[in-house]
Amino acid sequence: MTAHTHKSPLIVHRAHPLNAEPPGNLLQQSFLTPQQHFFVRTHGSIPEIDPSRYRLLLTGLVQQPRAFSLDELRSLAPARTVPVTLECAGNRRTEIMAVKPLGGEVPWGAGAISTANWLGIPLREVLRAVGVQANARYVAFTGLDEAPFAGETVHFGSSITLGKALSQDVLLAYEMNDEPLTPEHGFPLRLIVPGYIGARSVKWLGEITLQHHPSTNPYQTRDYKLFPSEVTAQTADWSRGKTLESLVLNAVITTPQAGETVAAGRVQVRGYAISGEEAPVERVELSVDDGQTWKTATIVERAGPYAWCFWELSLSLPPGDRQLIVRAWDTSKHTQPEDVRNLWNFKGYMNNACHRVTIHLV
Ligand code: MTE
Ligand code: MO
Image (cartoon, rainbow, N blue to C red; front, side, top):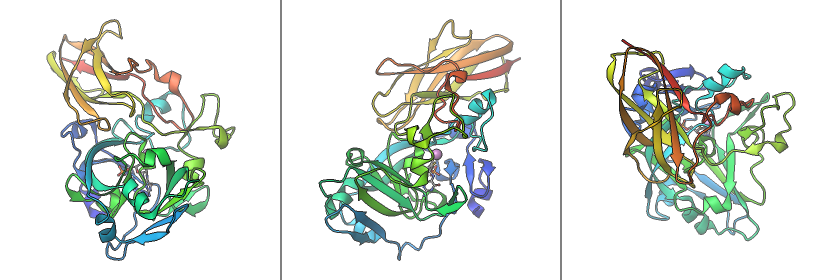
Protein backbone atom coordinates (compact mmCIF):
# COMPACT_ATOMS: atom_id res chain seq x y z
CA MET A 1 0.00 0.00 0.00
CA THR A 2 1.35 3.44 -0.88
CA ALA A 3 1.72 6.31 1.58
CA HIS A 4 -0.95 8.12 -0.40
CA THR A 5 -3.47 5.40 0.35
CA HIS A 6 -2.56 5.31 4.07
CA LYS A 7 -3.73 8.89 4.41
CA SER A 8 -6.85 8.31 2.39
CA PRO A 9 -10.27 8.22 4.02
CA LEU A 10 -11.29 5.08 2.13
CA ILE A 11 -12.69 1.96 3.79
CA VAL A 12 -9.92 -0.60 3.22
CA HIS A 13 -11.36 -4.11 2.82
CA ARG A 14 -7.95 -5.60 2.08
CA ALA A 15 -4.53 -3.98 2.13
CA HIS A 16 -2.72 -6.67 0.05
CA PRO A 17 -3.94 -6.69 -2.63
CA LEU A 18 -5.45 -3.25 -2.10
CA ASN A 19 -9.26 -3.14 -2.17
CA ALA A 20 -10.87 0.02 -0.83
CA GLU A 21 -14.02 2.08 -1.28
CA PRO A 22 -15.14 5.58 -0.30
CA PRO A 23 -17.97 5.87 2.24
CA GLY A 24 -21.23 7.25 0.79
CA ASN A 25 -20.92 10.80 2.08
CA LEU A 26 -17.46 11.11 0.49
CA LEU A 27 -18.70 9.63 -2.78
CA GLN A 28 -21.46 12.20 -2.94
CA GLN A 29 -19.09 15.15 -2.36
CA SER A 30 -18.24 15.58 -6.00
CA PHE A 31 -19.68 14.35 -9.27
CA LEU A 32 -16.17 13.61 -10.56
CA THR A 33 -14.45 11.50 -7.92
CA PRO A 34 -10.99 12.85 -6.94
CA GLN A 35 -8.32 10.18 -7.49
CA GLN A 36 -7.62 9.84 -3.77
CA HIS A 37 -11.31 9.07 -3.16
CA PHE A 38 -11.79 6.77 -6.19
CA PHE A 39 -12.45 3.14 -5.22
CA VAL A 40 -9.52 0.76 -5.78
CA ARG A 41 -9.97 -2.83 -6.93
CA THR A 42 -6.79 -4.85 -7.41
CA HIS A 43 -6.33 -8.62 -7.72
CA GLY A 44 -2.58 -8.62 -7.28
CA SER A 45 0.46 -6.37 -7.31
CA ILE A 46 0.56 -2.68 -8.16
CA PRO A 47 3.42 -2.68 -10.66
CA GLU A 48 5.99 0.11 -10.70
CA ILE A 49 6.46 1.11 -14.30
CA ASP A 50 9.09 3.46 -15.71
CA PRO A 51 7.11 5.51 -18.27
CA SER A 52 10.18 6.18 -20.42
CA ARG A 53 10.77 2.46 -20.90
CA TYR A 54 7.10 1.48 -21.09
CA ARG A 55 5.90 -0.22 -24.31
CA LEU A 56 2.40 -1.34 -25.28
CA LEU A 57 2.46 -4.47 -27.47
CA LEU A 58 -0.06 -4.99 -30.28
CA THR A 59 -0.15 -8.65 -31.31
CA GLY A 60 -2.28 -11.41 -32.79
CA LEU A 61 -4.47 -10.95 -35.86
CA VAL A 62 -2.98 -7.62 -36.94
CA GLN A 63 -1.31 -6.68 -40.23
CA GLN A 64 1.75 -5.44 -38.41
CA PRO A 65 2.61 -6.33 -34.78
CA ARG A 66 4.08 -3.32 -33.00
CA ALA A 67 5.37 -1.96 -29.71
CA PHE A 68 4.33 1.62 -28.95
CA SER A 69 5.97 4.02 -26.51
CA LEU A 70 3.68 6.47 -24.70
CA ASP A 71 4.85 9.30 -26.98
CA GLU A 72 4.15 7.20 -30.07
CA LEU A 73 0.64 6.44 -28.83
CA ARG A 74 -0.03 10.09 -28.10
CA SER A 75 1.09 11.14 -31.57
CA LEU A 76 -1.22 8.61 -33.30
CA ALA A 77 -4.43 10.59 -32.92
CA PRO A 78 -5.98 13.50 -31.01
CA ALA A 79 -6.69 12.63 -27.38
CA ARG A 80 -10.31 12.37 -26.31
CA THR A 81 -11.96 13.02 -22.94
CA VAL A 82 -14.96 10.91 -21.87
CA PRO A 83 -16.75 11.05 -18.52
CA VAL A 84 -17.09 7.40 -17.43
CA THR A 85 -18.26 5.78 -14.21
CA LEU A 86 -16.41 2.61 -13.27
CA GLU A 87 -18.49 0.19 -11.23
CA CYS A 88 -17.25 -3.13 -9.93
CA ALA A 89 -19.53 -6.11 -10.65
CA GLY A 90 -19.32 -6.73 -6.88
CA ASN A 91 -20.69 -3.32 -5.87
CA ARG A 92 -23.31 -3.74 -3.07
CA ARG A 93 -22.18 -7.33 -2.48
CA THR A 94 -22.63 -7.13 1.33
CA GLU A 95 -26.40 -7.07 0.78
CA ILE A 96 -26.15 -10.34 -1.20
CA MET A 97 -23.91 -11.84 1.49
CA ALA A 98 -26.53 -11.00 4.12
CA VAL A 99 -29.03 -13.24 2.27
CA LYS A 100 -26.67 -16.24 2.22
CA PRO A 101 -22.88 -16.27 2.75
CA LEU A 102 -20.43 -16.30 -0.17
CA GLY A 103 -16.94 -17.72 -0.36
CA GLY A 104 -14.33 -15.09 0.52
CA GLU A 105 -15.31 -12.37 -1.96
CA VAL A 106 -14.47 -8.72 -1.18
CA PRO A 107 -17.39 -7.40 0.94
CA TRP A 108 -18.14 -4.25 -1.05
CA GLY A 109 -20.69 -1.76 0.25
CA ALA A 110 -22.25 0.65 -2.23
CA GLY A 111 -18.97 2.49 -2.90
CA ALA A 112 -17.29 0.20 -5.45
CA ILE A 113 -18.17 2.87 -7.98
CA SER A 114 -16.57 6.20 -8.93
CA THR A 115 -16.52 8.63 -11.86
CA ALA A 116 -13.75 10.42 -13.72
CA ASN A 117 -13.11 12.38 -16.87
CA TRP A 118 -10.74 10.02 -18.65
CA LEU A 119 -8.27 11.38 -21.18
CA GLY A 120 -6.72 9.04 -23.69
CA ILE A 121 -6.29 7.83 -27.25
CA PRO A 122 -9.30 6.00 -28.72
CA LEU A 123 -8.42 2.30 -28.97
CA ARG A 124 -9.75 2.23 -32.50
CA GLU A 125 -7.02 4.63 -33.67
CA VAL A 126 -4.38 2.22 -32.42
CA LEU A 127 -6.17 -0.69 -34.10
CA ARG A 128 -6.30 1.32 -37.31
CA ALA A 129 -2.55 1.98 -37.06
CA VAL A 130 -1.66 -1.73 -36.88
CA GLY A 131 -4.43 -2.94 -39.22
CA VAL A 132 -6.94 -5.57 -38.04
CA GLN A 133 -7.09 -8.85 -39.98
CA ALA A 134 -10.49 -9.84 -41.39
CA ASN A 135 -10.94 -12.89 -39.13
CA ALA A 136 -10.43 -11.01 -35.83
CA ARG A 137 -13.55 -10.96 -33.62
CA TYR A 138 -12.28 -10.10 -30.10
CA VAL A 139 -9.71 -7.79 -28.58
CA ALA A 140 -7.91 -9.22 -25.54
CA PHE A 141 -6.06 -7.12 -22.96
CA THR A 142 -3.33 -8.14 -20.54
CA GLY A 143 -2.13 -6.18 -17.52
CA LEU A 144 1.45 -6.01 -16.23
CA ASP A 145 0.39 -6.84 -12.67
CA GLU A 146 0.78 -10.31 -11.17
CA ALA A 147 -2.29 -11.78 -9.55
CA PRO A 148 -2.98 -15.14 -7.93
CA PHE A 149 -5.53 -17.39 -9.55
CA ALA A 150 -6.31 -20.92 -8.31
CA GLY A 151 -2.81 -21.35 -6.90
CA GLU A 152 -0.99 -19.88 -9.90
CA THR A 153 0.34 -16.42 -10.66
CA VAL A 154 -1.13 -14.82 -13.76
CA HIS A 155 -1.45 -11.40 -15.34
CA PHE A 156 -4.94 -9.92 -15.02
CA GLY A 157 -6.71 -9.87 -18.38
CA SER A 158 -10.03 -9.50 -20.18
CA SER A 159 -11.51 -9.13 -23.64
CA ILE A 160 -14.29 -7.30 -25.43
CA THR A 161 -15.79 -7.84 -28.88
CA LEU A 162 -14.17 -6.08 -31.81
CA GLY A 163 -17.47 -4.25 -32.30
CA LYS A 164 -17.31 -2.69 -28.83
CA ALA A 165 -13.58 -1.99 -29.25
CA LEU A 166 -14.30 0.13 -32.34
CA SER A 167 -16.50 2.56 -30.38
CA GLN A 168 -14.80 5.97 -30.30
CA ASP A 169 -15.33 6.07 -26.52
CA VAL A 170 -13.18 3.05 -25.65
CA LEU A 171 -9.95 4.70 -24.53
CA LEU A 172 -6.35 3.93 -23.75
CA ALA A 173 -6.34 6.43 -20.89
CA TYR A 174 -3.36 8.13 -19.25
CA GLU A 175 -5.11 10.87 -17.27
CA MET A 176 -8.11 11.00 -14.97
CA ASN A 177 -9.62 14.33 -13.91
CA ASP A 178 -6.68 16.23 -15.47
CA GLU A 179 -4.02 14.31 -13.52
CA PRO A 180 -1.77 11.44 -14.61
CA LEU A 181 -3.08 8.08 -13.38
CA THR A 182 -1.78 7.16 -9.94
CA PRO A 183 -0.10 3.74 -9.55
CA GLU A 184 -3.30 2.21 -8.06
CA HIS A 185 -5.41 3.26 -11.01
CA GLY A 186 -3.15 1.90 -13.74
CA PHE A 187 -0.19 4.22 -14.37
CA PRO A 188 0.98 4.79 -17.03
CA LEU A 189 -1.83 3.46 -19.23
CA ARG A 190 -5.14 1.69 -18.71
CA LEU A 191 -8.09 0.67 -20.78
CA ILE A 192 -11.46 2.35 -20.22
CA VAL A 193 -14.49 0.42 -21.52
CA PRO A 194 -17.47 2.74 -20.93
CA GLY A 195 -20.74 1.12 -19.87
CA TYR A 196 -19.13 -2.23 -18.94
CA ILE A 197 -18.26 -3.70 -15.54
CA GLY A 198 -14.99 -2.36 -14.14
CA ALA A 199 -13.19 -5.68 -14.65
CA ARG A 200 -13.00 -5.06 -18.41
CA SER A 201 -11.05 -1.81 -17.94
CA VAL A 202 -7.60 -3.37 -17.60
CA LYS A 203 -5.04 -1.32 -15.67
CA TRP A 204 -1.24 -1.24 -16.32
CA LEU A 205 -2.00 -2.35 -19.85
CA GLY A 206 0.86 -4.38 -21.33
CA GLU A 207 -0.51 -6.13 -24.38
CA ILE A 208 -3.47 -5.94 -26.75
CA THR A 209 -4.12 -9.08 -28.82
CA LEU A 210 -6.52 -9.38 -31.73
CA GLN A 211 -8.01 -12.87 -31.85
CA HIS A 212 -10.85 -15.01 -33.12
CA HIS A 213 -12.01 -16.03 -29.63
CA PRO A 214 -12.53 -14.25 -26.28
CA SER A 215 -9.58 -13.95 -23.87
CA THR A 216 -8.52 -17.23 -22.26
CA ASN A 217 -7.28 -15.32 -19.20
CA PRO A 218 -8.86 -16.93 -16.11
CA TYR A 219 -10.23 -13.56 -15.01
CA GLN A 220 -12.31 -13.69 -18.20
CA THR A 221 -13.15 -17.41 -18.36
CA ARG A 222 -13.48 -18.37 -14.67
CA ASP A 223 -14.54 -15.12 -13.04
CA TYR A 224 -16.98 -12.25 -13.71
CA LYS A 225 -19.72 -14.57 -14.93
CA LEU A 226 -23.29 -14.71 -13.72
CA PHE A 227 -24.87 -18.00 -12.61
CA PRO A 228 -28.40 -18.89 -11.53
CA SER A 229 -29.04 -19.11 -7.78
CA GLU A 230 -28.98 -22.93 -7.68
CA VAL A 231 -25.34 -23.03 -8.85
CA THR A 232 -22.59 -23.02 -6.20
CA ALA A 233 -18.80 -22.74 -6.29
CA GLN A 234 -18.70 -26.56 -6.15
CA THR A 235 -21.16 -27.19 -9.00
CA ALA A 236 -20.29 -24.29 -11.33
CA ASP A 237 -19.48 -25.20 -14.94
CA TRP A 238 -17.67 -22.01 -15.92
CA SER A 239 -18.26 -22.56 -19.62
CA ARG A 240 -21.99 -22.12 -18.93
CA GLY A 241 -21.81 -18.92 -16.88
CA LYS A 242 -22.88 -15.71 -18.62
CA THR A 243 -20.01 -13.31 -19.24
CA LEU A 244 -20.72 -9.96 -17.59
CA GLU A 245 -20.41 -6.99 -19.88
CA SER A 246 -22.91 -4.12 -19.67
CA LEU A 247 -23.70 -2.53 -16.31
CA VAL A 248 -27.29 -2.75 -15.04
CA LEU A 249 -29.72 -0.11 -13.85
CA ASN A 250 -28.97 0.78 -10.23
CA ALA A 251 -29.62 3.50 -7.67
CA VAL A 252 -28.20 4.08 -4.19
CA ILE A 253 -28.96 6.39 -1.27
CA THR A 254 -25.66 7.84 -0.07
CA THR A 255 -27.08 10.44 2.35
CA PRO A 256 -28.30 9.78 5.01
CA GLN A 257 -26.40 6.57 5.73
CA ALA A 258 -27.99 3.39 7.11
CA GLY A 259 -28.44 3.64 10.89
CA GLU A 260 -27.87 7.40 10.96
CA THR A 261 -29.76 9.55 13.48
CA VAL A 262 -31.35 12.52 11.73
CA ALA A 263 -33.49 15.45 12.94
CA ALA A 264 -37.18 14.91 12.09
CA GLY A 265 -38.77 17.39 9.66
CA ARG A 266 -37.13 18.26 6.35
CA VAL A 267 -34.61 15.60 5.38
CA GLN A 268 -32.44 16.04 2.31
CA VAL A 269 -31.89 12.63 0.66
CA ARG A 270 -29.12 12.23 -1.91
CA GLY A 271 -27.61 9.52 -4.02
CA TYR A 272 -26.41 8.24 -7.36
CA ALA A 273 -28.06 6.27 -10.16
CA ILE A 274 -26.50 4.49 -13.13
CA SER A 275 -27.68 2.40 -16.08
CA GLY A 276 -26.37 0.13 -18.77
CA GLU A 277 -25.18 1.70 -22.00
CA GLU A 278 -28.39 1.17 -23.97
CA ALA A 279 -30.96 3.01 -21.86
CA PRO A 280 -30.06 6.05 -19.71
CA VAL A 281 -31.63 6.74 -16.31
CA GLU A 282 -34.91 8.56 -16.86
CA ARG A 283 -36.35 8.88 -13.35
CA VAL A 284 -35.40 8.22 -9.74
CA GLU A 285 -38.06 7.69 -7.06
CA LEU A 286 -38.15 7.26 -3.29
CA SER A 287 -40.65 5.55 -1.04
CA VAL A 288 -40.94 5.88 2.74
CA ASP A 289 -43.94 3.51 3.07
CA ASP A 290 -42.47 0.21 1.87
CA GLY A 291 -43.22 0.90 -1.77
CA GLN A 292 -46.88 1.85 -1.54
CA THR A 293 -46.25 5.37 -2.82
CA TRP A 294 -43.26 6.97 -4.54
CA LYS A 295 -41.96 10.53 -4.90
CA THR A 296 -39.85 11.59 -7.86
CA ALA A 297 -36.38 12.90 -7.04
CA THR A 298 -34.63 15.65 -9.00
CA ILE A 299 -31.69 14.62 -11.14
CA VAL A 300 -29.23 17.38 -10.32
CA GLU A 301 -26.19 16.35 -12.36
CA ARG A 302 -25.43 14.01 -15.25
CA ALA A 303 -22.76 13.76 -17.96
CA GLY A 304 -23.48 11.68 -21.02
CA PRO A 305 -24.40 8.02 -21.46
CA TYR A 306 -21.55 6.45 -19.44
CA ALA A 307 -21.56 8.44 -16.21
CA TRP A 308 -23.77 8.12 -13.16
CA CYS A 309 -26.27 10.82 -12.30
CA PHE A 310 -26.66 12.50 -8.95
CA TRP A 311 -30.19 13.00 -7.59
CA GLU A 312 -31.75 14.53 -4.49
CA LEU A 313 -35.12 14.85 -2.83
CA SER A 314 -36.28 16.76 0.24
CA LEU A 315 -38.73 14.72 2.36
CA SER A 316 -40.79 15.68 5.37
CA LEU A 317 -40.43 12.90 7.94
CA PRO A 318 -41.89 12.54 11.47
CA PRO A 319 -39.90 11.12 14.43
CA GLY A 320 -39.35 7.34 14.54
CA ASP A 321 -37.46 4.69 12.61
CA ARG A 322 -38.04 4.81 8.89
CA GLN A 323 -36.88 2.85 5.87
CA LEU A 324 -36.12 4.83 2.72
CA ILE A 325 -36.27 2.91 -0.57
CA VAL A 326 -34.93 4.15 -3.90
CA ARG A 327 -35.46 2.88 -7.42
CA ALA A 328 -34.51 4.17 -10.86
CA TRP A 329 -36.32 3.81 -14.18
CA ASP A 330 -34.51 3.83 -17.52
CA THR A 331 -35.64 5.12 -20.91
CA SER A 332 -36.80 1.59 -21.85
CA LYS A 333 -39.28 1.93 -18.93
CA HIS A 334 -37.55 -0.79 -16.91
CA THR A 335 -37.05 -0.47 -13.18
CA GLN A 336 -35.08 -2.48 -10.60
CA PRO A 337 -35.86 -5.75 -8.80
CA GLU A 338 -37.52 -5.12 -5.46
CA ASP A 339 -35.80 -7.69 -3.29
CA VAL A 340 -32.15 -8.73 -3.09
CA ARG A 341 -33.23 -12.29 -2.23
CA ASN A 342 -34.19 -12.71 -5.89
CA LEU A 343 -30.66 -11.89 -7.02
CA TRP A 344 -28.44 -14.22 -4.99
CA ASN A 345 -25.59 -15.72 -7.02
CA PHE A 346 -22.57 -17.44 -5.56
CA LYS A 347 -20.07 -14.81 -6.74
CA GLY A 348 -22.24 -11.97 -5.47
CA TYR A 349 -22.39 -9.94 -8.68
CA MET A 350 -24.72 -7.31 -10.11
CA ASN A 351 -26.80 -6.44 -7.08
CA ASN A 352 -29.26 -3.87 -8.36
CA ALA A 353 -32.16 -4.56 -5.99
CA CYS A 354 -33.95 -1.42 -4.74
CA HIS A 355 -31.58 0.10 -2.16
CA ARG A 356 -33.03 0.37 1.37
CA VAL A 357 -31.70 2.54 4.18
CA THR A 358 -33.22 2.67 7.66
CA ILE A 359 -32.66 5.89 9.64
CA HIS A 360 -33.66 7.10 13.12
CA LEU A 361 -35.57 10.39 13.13
CA VAL A 362 -35.58 12.27 16.44
N1 MTE B 1 -6.66 -4.36 -14.21
C1 MTE B 1 -5.61 -5.05 -13.75
N2 MTE B 1 -4.49 -5.10 -14.50
N3 MTE B 1 -5.65 -5.71 -12.56
C2 MTE B 1 -6.78 -5.70 -11.77
O1 MTE B 1 -6.79 -6.29 -10.68
N4 MTE B 1 -9.12 -4.93 -11.57
C3 MTE B 1 -10.30 -4.67 -12.40
C4 MTE B 1 -10.08 -3.47 -13.30
N5 MTE B 1 -8.80 -3.56 -13.98
C5 MTE B 1 -7.92 -4.98 -12.25
C6 MTE B 1 -7.80 -4.29 -13.48
C7 MTE B 1 -11.54 -4.46 -11.65
S1 MTE B 1 -12.33 -5.85 -11.12
C8 MTE B 1 -12.10 -3.22 -11.50
S2 MTE B 1 -13.62 -3.04 -10.76
C9 MTE B 1 -11.40 -2.00 -11.97
O2 MTE B 1 -10.13 -2.29 -12.53
C10 MTE B 1 -11.22 -1.02 -10.83
O3 MTE B 1 -10.54 0.13 -11.26
P1 MTE B 1 -9.96 1.13 -10.17
O4 MTE B 1 -9.12 0.36 -9.19
O5 MTE B 1 -9.20 2.17 -10.91
O6 MTE B 1 -11.18 1.73 -9.49
MO1 MO C 1 -14.39 -5.26 -10.32
